[in-house]
Image (cartoon, rainbow, N blue to C red; front, side):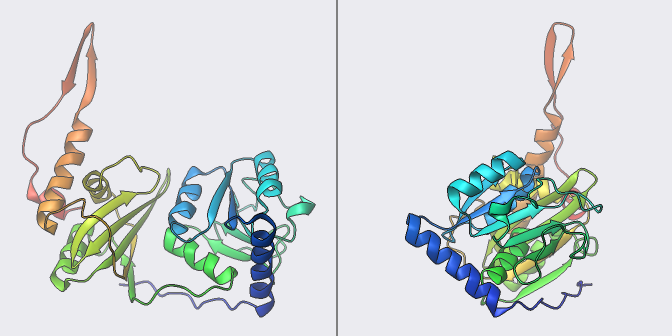
Length: 294
């Protein structure tokens, strides 16, 4: 069953005019692309924002501490700050609320739950936005577009759902039957944090896949990694994609190969026995049921 999408929050014309004027001032004074400052100790948040703003003309500046954030803000004059709130108590991962030079910059507050203005120090209803966890590139991109008063480049339709009701392998097979193209975003929250993956699909067939924060994985390895995730949510948005086909095989073949790569990677674990070093490897074939259960 698809989860209901909450009604969009309205934003004042003042906010859009103010931020556009800020961008114009930056462009005129520095001649640089507008900068978005991400202040958080969580590296995943930085990765998600970079993916969301890829090819948009914005530059992303990362700060992992209060000192880094203040210095970066003074040097880059960001048009927007994305600030992570650590937990339900309202503590910030990077404390910036009492820095006067940053007080007037529009800010997106990433919070674990709905929080009041009183709980969020420095929050301004007319200038700032609150975004609930878990985050994703699509969610961040929408929030930035709304805050900056820009048009969203989204002509396609989208569908959301829970992967606990339909597995990723089954979902990809359905998309192949429909021969639709677009981007499938998968988000799963574990005790160790949130994991996000993306699969680009052309005419129903996956062409690229990536796991955010694990950029070294090949497309097939990333697809295999996502097959091991339990539950989570998905969002599929139709769009035209021009990327290179890095998978180059139909869905069933891609799923089998992705599962094999992941299985081999997890079984190639070094085992130390005295002075000898050997690798524990099992040569058995990956059973088809292994994929369908993902």
